[in-house]
Amino acid sequence: MTLTQIKYFITAAETLSFTKAASRLFVSQQVVSRQIQLLEKDLGFLLFERNNKTFMLTDSGKLLYSLWSRHFKETEQTVNEALLLNHKKRCIRVGILEISNVIDMILPKIKLLNERFPNISWDYYLGNFAEIEHAVDTSSIDLAVTLSTELSKKHPKDQELFLQPLKLGIFVGSSHPLYHQESLSIKELEEETFFLFSEDISYDATNKVLTDCKQHGYYPKNIKYFSNINQMEFALLSGKGVFIGYDIFFRSAGINLKKFPLQPLETLEESDLIVAWRYPELKMFAQVFFDA
Image 1 (cartoon, rainbow, N blue to C red):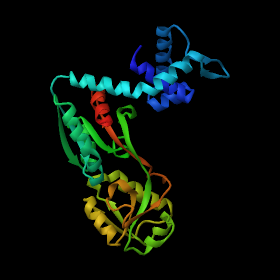
Image 2: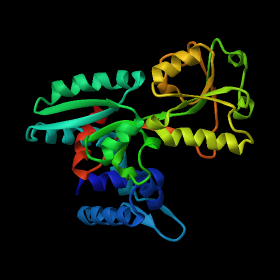
Image 3: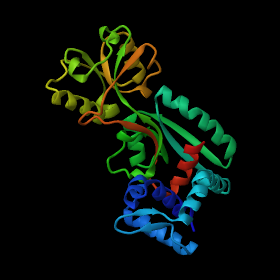
Image 4: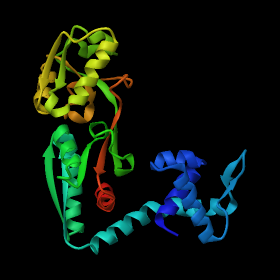
């Protein structure tokens, strides 16, 4: 019996589907099915009733789910921490987006990790989207705190932990005439100055915004590119343009910077703030960083 098998069982019990459990765990359906079969073999009884019409927990499965689901996260976290305390001295390099709100979120983790794991040296590197992506791809860092949409499409989803979901919005400063509207859509922005990230920061995000404008029948007449998020925020507060993106970018979001909710566009989708890693052996460090 392993922690992985128990985790797969809990997920399958919550979804009542090996296929849905596999999707949530970012593994194949066959892997989930096999691990639960091995768990049932170790236990000596079935956890699920399976036939063509039903897939449900047995009474024994319900009993184990009620116990394991309450304590699994704590157990997994404790095991990871115990492993790290017994790990040989090592340096873990963490790349973090150079965004004030992200840094504020990570600082308490840094303090806690330094206190709890003196045998692990946590080194930190700040960078923009493109720099963090390059550092992950070249293994210049071990862990990355970035947006899920700013990593290579080839990056495995089972090597990501989700810190915070991010919702799309149109951002307008209090000095802008559109600020006092109750709602705002991308179709209404044709005459506005668009603030976009310069291509050296995030070519992908910039290209997606422009593509969606074209799909709404226009190309922005005025575009201003920024290589610094703080400079963009100041320009937004001055009422000189609009921005499509996520509120985690700005300290003033919700104060002097209004966010109009926006449904995911054709190419610019919702994103998540994540902890990502490249090699399987780094998962333990990522999990402890995530839990801190």
